[in-house]
Length: 113
Image (cartoon, rainbow, N blue to C red; front, side, top):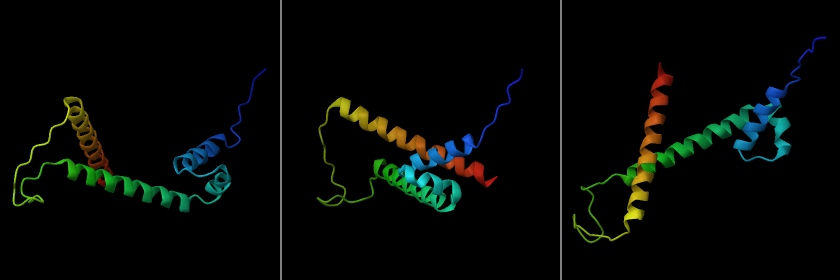
């Protein structure tokens, strides 16, 4: 005896559920996502754009910039004392942001070809 496997749209429902979950929507939106996904994809695209923008701004803020004058006057050096663990954590965060930006740039370059 053989068993015939049937999908019954499980993959489409799982994809719609995943999109709904990633967009932080309630379960009531799931049928709408399956029926008309375009507005939800536009919302996801906008969210991705906003995240990339924030990531880029964080990378710019993490870069040392010697040309910008400080509040005290032109190019006055000011020292701040922090714990080594805090400094290492900040360096790790900067590395994560830079790595993410490189991945985005690489994905954009691959998409152009």
